[in-house]
Image (tube, rainbow, N blue to C red; front, side, top):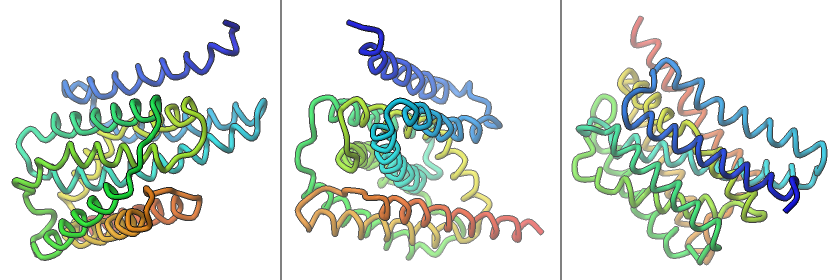
Length: 260
């Protein structure tokens, strides 16, 4: 086997090691929290660097990878939102979040390697459950996010479902899809931690997260009822990330004003 033929397998091996190392570090509590944002940002930087490198030798492959990573990252942001809601104030939430992210990673690896079965009905059911959770969250009327309670049991199943959606939403060859999804998961646990800390400081966190859950639930429900999984084109990806960034910006502004 030639060196160029080995490069995709080497890339997958490096990314698997990076994701596993990040999960183990977060599970053991050895990752300094001041580095959370840097590690989460490193995943984005790595995706852009890979796309830039591919554009030099294979521009079509670079576009395919970038589109796959954008879709996978949008689903990862949805996963972060769901995990923050389901694990808020849960004892030993750190390990539950690591377990959920690990389950999502394993789902993406298996489905990218073996092919994806139809996820239409799964998407519709998931969307319905998310809408119910959004209604519960909106009615809580508490400052910040309420204690998830028994709902925290849904963290791992939700992560598995979103892992399946992430693979089904991306196009391209198995190696491209797998690499895109692994890079999208880098720093995901840290994003959950950062968002949870922000929620503790924002008085209207429940309203903001209700809006995000409604958006996610409607998107999944409509995709499922249409008979296919939650496929992402560029417009859906930009809209998903834009919604998350808008709510995050409003929560930061609220938190800063509340401290003054």
